[in-house]
Image (cartoon, rainbow, N blue to C red; front, side, top):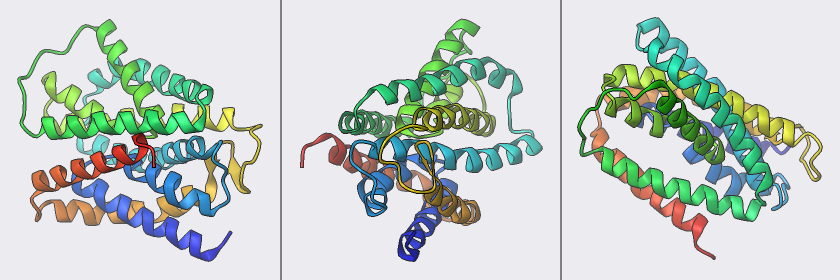
Length: 266
C-alpha cells in the first residue's frame, strides 16, 4: 500500500465530508466516480471488477457516516419513527437486491447504469430546488414499493439514497428536518444491506487487491471515513454562511458532467 495512495484516500474523505455537511448529500456520488476513474486503477484493480469494488466500498463508507448522522438526528428528535418503520422493509429488500443485480451486470455496463442514475439524480436535484406540492403519505404497500425502488437504485449507485428519500418524504408532508433525519436512518440501513451483498458476492472473485473484504477495499474505506467524519462539521458550518441553493445548482451541473463522462464513449 503506497503512502501516496493512502493520502489521496484521506484527501477524498476531506472533500466528501465537507460536501456532505454543506449540501446534505451522500458521499457516494463523489466517492464512486473518484474510486472508479482515478484511485482504484492506481491500486491495480482490473476493469472487470472496478465498478463493483467502487460501489461496495462507497456503501461501506456510508454505513459509518450515515450511522453517525442518524444517531445525532435520533438524539435531536429529528426522526419520524412511524415513517421509517414503513420504509425500512422496502429499503432493506431493495438494498440487498441491488447488490444481486450489480453482480449480474458486467463492470463496463455497470458504469453506464451508474451514469444513468447520476443523470436522473442531477435532474431531480435541479427540479427539487423549485419546490412542489405536498401530498399525504401513500398506503403502506405503496410506501414499501417506493422504499424498495429507493433501495435498489441506491445500491446500484453506491449511495445512501438521501437524494431520493428526502424529496419523497418532503413531498408527502414530512417536515424537512425529520425528512433528513429519517433519510439518514434509511441510508445507513440501505448501505448495510448493499455492502453486505457486495462483500458476499465478491468473496470468491478473481483479481481482488490485497486488504479486500469481497468487493470492499478496506484501505479506501478507512482512509475516506477517517477524514470525512471530521470534515462534515466544517461543511455544516459553511452551510450557514454560503448560498446553499446556488451551490446545489453547481453540484447538479457537476453531476451532469460525471454522468456524461460515464455514459459517453471516450
